[in-house]
Length: 124
Image 1 (cartoon, helix red, strand yellow):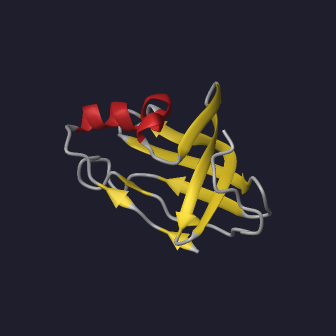
Image 2 (cartoon, one colour):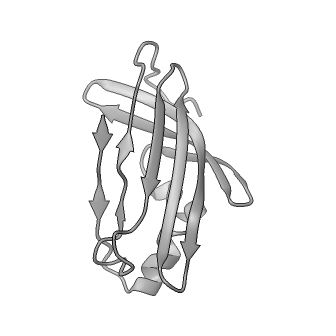
């Protein structure tokens, strides 16, 4: 299953960049995401994905492959495995344009959930 999402940020580029690239600050604003540990540039966390009646929990690691403040370009790669199953969830997130307020982030994702035994409450 592919998920795709994008949004606009009504802020000047410098302000949007500072907020959107600070994973520790922005994570509490993202429903269904819990940051568990930060080691240098590696972020470990849990993500809850709900599609219709199915809820699946993934645990994984995210890191920036590219973080260029001068050009306002970033590529975030996250990979996770289903906590109670065999599913995988790779995610790539990057702006389509260096002007963050125009097309800030898109995140195509391929999910392959194994829904047997998926928890209905957070593992955190």
